Image (cartoon, rainbow, N blue to C red):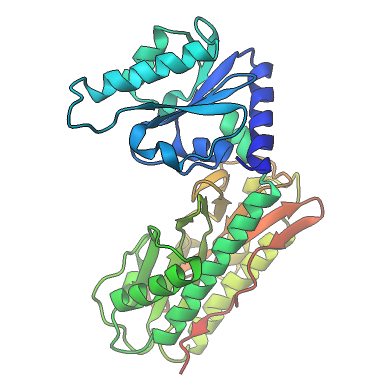
Length: 372
């Protein structure tokens, strides 16, 4: 557990004290990672927090992947055995009971992520302690990104920029969307140094008008626009960038339409500061696009927060009046999807500071022609 995780854990305990809780059982994988640095698996896992110590409840097969700290230890349950006949849920419940008792939380008020705990585990806990929902606790904790989180997001953005370079090298008439996707993924894995699940969108020509296109075997044609929007989780954190490419050289109409996105993005970034409301940033983007006659061709949000999730609060939509705060990391993504000139989107990631916003990417913001 690093110093950053220890600081987050101290803040989490302070939140628990404010709410009159003796401890908490953290079950969402992203939140276990946030407090401990353990990336987790698909099997049930828990981070049980007392005011002085913590216990991790993990499947036995993964216990060695946890780096222990002085104040806590790992309890395990048997997740796979040739000889164990007791149901898995029973084994998990026994481990949870041992953790609750060891931390002195029996019959105490304990916070639980009700939206992220299995029903069978909740029933077991209700026999041991008084359950209270943690509600928005983690949303409040996670809004302000610490330096270590920003550093990881920056590193992930650099990986996405590598993907755009790779796409720009291979985009040409006749190549398929899947070929472009494979090329950019190979470049990302090489940059990251390990494989990861790639999430995102890629659509070309008429498919660039679709809301969330996935790559297909469609062959690119001269003059096509190609939207590439990438938002994978790498080392626990997301980055989220979009660029639009053109197969060949852009027409004057395509360049003009994309310039509207550049101006809308720049106007929004200029208004980013602590206290500005999410809905006001959204309004700036929509006003810029609407002034050029494209209002009806911009159907989605103007942006969102990002971090442990690809999309998290605040959301840049008309209905969200949340004030921005120092430490927010935002993605701003204006788009225009015109049936004649084509679909395009432009996205940047920004850190809110006391003085405004800092761009986390310097990758070219103009419409990108494939390199010859």
